[in-house]
Length: 290
Ligand SMILES: CSC[C@H]1O[C@H](OP(=O)(O)O)[C@H](O)[C@@H]1O
Ligand SMILES: Nc1ncnc2[nH]cnc12
Image (cartoon, rainbow, N blue to C red; front, top):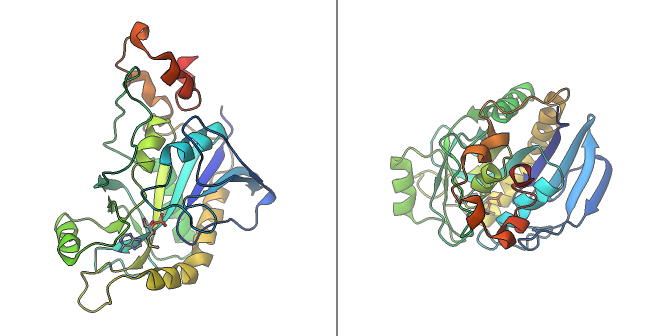
């Protein structure tokens, strides 16, 4: 049975995790370039944890320039078995006010300027994304939020825009008409790459604003987002700690078979595979390339 290593990717305002035992920042090299920052290794409640600030400490990378492939590869190389993403997002529904934690279960990807796959010419693979999050990890997040009395919503669609500008009013109304719950700029291609790397993934969106559609609320600004993030920092920390406490004990495989998704995904004939690309896939697809 694999030992659990819980990965956490923190978004805007979440550049560190306090309270880890034996915290150590380590730089990890990947064949895809540099991750956003070094990774923070430590343990909490007996669970091995690895943390990465998505934009880097000091918030250096934009949603577009984040090297999502390097970030996911580095997590995989660090031995992460389960990945939780923490992200600020705007609300597209009246009933999800700022301060709500949304445990997302679907995504719409509207990004267009990012590398979205580890695979390519010489190693073509198609992984299923119908159910993009791990139900077991998402349930752990829901239970953790309930235990900590944090206002939360189970499920909801996250629309990922390219940014870095916020949406126009017409776009915000359009996404509401699509029944999206929250909007952000960073969950994609992160969630897709996690699936390609056979990593169970779940996302908790911290609602910071009502984007720009709400007639009774100011349209979103960075100031407002940062203010709400600071107000919610304690809850973000509580949810991460409570989820780690729920994930002690023997790790069960994801109910969706995410850890073996590449068994039925690869198209390229063995004799046509590109050795250079396969070498780069040593961490992501190492299980099937051995
Ligand atoms: C500072 S608001 C825009 C910023 O926040 C959201 O997500 P994350 O927490 O991952 O940084 C959004 O996607 C933008 O990156
Ligand atoms: N309204 C919004 N749109 C996109 N990303 C966000 N992150 C936080 N609030 C956001």
